[in-house]
Length: 87
Image (tube, rainbow, N blue to C red; front, side, top):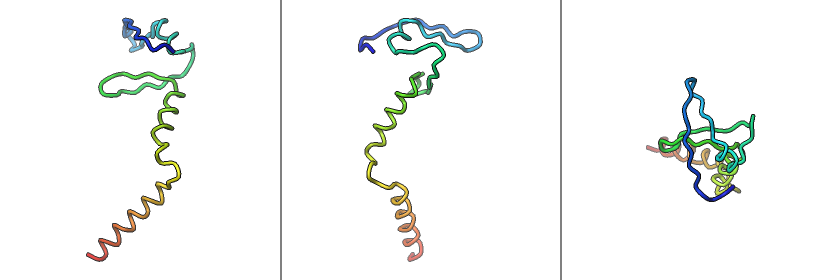
């Protein structure tokens, strides 16, 4: 994928369909029939491959490696219950 910026006009069809211009499809490696993921982020439509979503999520949750979030939650709840019981 190129780091340069590509601009293209996109029209919204009568049934709400968008056609991604060939130059953008090529730059992003989108293939016919491929499933993509769409989301709204800060008022912008973001369309990406599932692999990109997976990489982003792995990077985000990497900071939790070696930790048990379930155990941390249980410990927090027990501490809350202990404080409420002694109050």
